[in-house]
Length: 609
Image 1 (cartoon, one colour):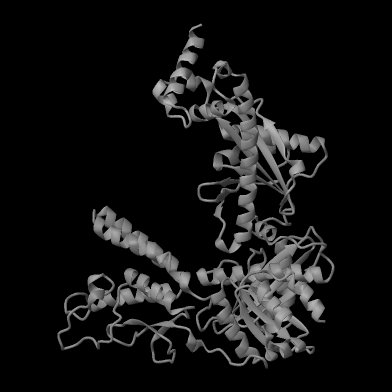
Image 2 (cartoon, rainbow, N blue to C red):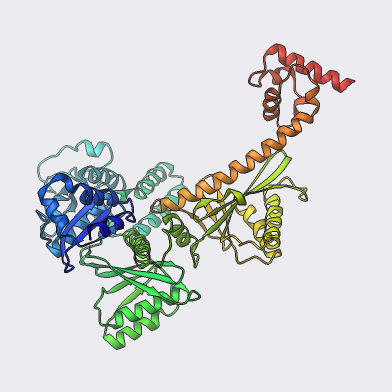
């Protein structure tokens, strides 16, 4: 049994999360957290920490499960929730939410104040958090007070005693309601209201409000106010980085993650009750390959909830389905379940928990297929993520990337690189000398390369790529689409990858920036793009160097091949060099004053002869 568990550890991802040990009856006996799940499980099963307690624990462990989280901080809170639920035998102490810091707003005061606390007793105040550290809380609080300045002091206001404003007032983090006439109670409470709205997840509304206020201030030529509001808007967009994934106390919902490989899919349910993630449930599904993801999701919802499972009041799914209202009505009539299905997260917290559910679904599906022998080899996580980001029906086994290289229209070439299973297949790389395109535009040259590439694949009866990645932006994508249409190959997924901000442009007009949570996908896509660029540049340099050897520069005595290449790289073409002055030639690295003079004289001697 231990050997089987050690084999399973090889497939565990190296990401943060929570692991769950179970005995031979399936009872949970231990729950732990880890910054790196694979490494922590190795420590348990290979070294047992050299502690009798863990040696006994491992001897009683017959199975394990795990839940992936976005960060180590998230794993702390999830561990605490699961320990409270299962009360596992080998967990020495139960974690308590009071260990986490919170922000409290005393709305029962005339001039409410905000401050950090670990006391979450109900006293009429509003509490936000938890935060994974006091440091992240203080950072958040500083930003909050720049956006919605309210007091942090312990004074009872209004006061009959004269109070001098503190430093917070002078650095514009408090409007000093302690000084009569500084701010009206209505204006102060508006700040408090906006702050509460923000922490309640209404970030879009607050952002829209700030944007409107900035426009009004600018229109009235009140640029100082506009700058203050602009700074608040920027701060607002940064503020949620310190949160642990947890919903509001009253939230009861099911979040469903989805992943698919070929004719198998997995739906993973995250039940959230009273704002807390309770556990995970996953279900493996099998179906004909032609069935769409939307059909699979609809069938799962019907089968899962019609069995009498009492879910949350809301079901958050990652796919848009056509029969949403019909399914809601069917469940209401059959089981008296008034469930609302949504595929659009209402705020950043819902978006983050849905991403986490999808990520766990990927890992669970791959693990189950490997266990059952239904998957021959491990599918790279990067390809699973690319499938989701690009909205593909199947995993992109073959990805091709195209790049163009030229200097002022000189020696124009194109290159295609091929990746299969996430790895380069160099035997399939191809070089293209631009033959027909008169324009020096990269977009027009991409058009030629794609047409020639598609024709060659047809001639050689080879597989078409699942994805074509084009170096560039919208102009390159537009002509790539034209080429595919003319070659009757519009079914190939094509996108343009812009280097500047790592943005992807798609035929439907959509532009996306890959989120940090999909770091494996972004890493692979960058490797593919850079490889295409390297291959194109290498080919271009070889052709350019060949041209240099046969150029008129060869007639100049005392100039070696290395200096010839440096001269051409600096000026871009022989013509530019011929029209250069002595001073310009001297600027080339490795060319001194005497050599520059000799080159200049020889060039003009040749020109005059």
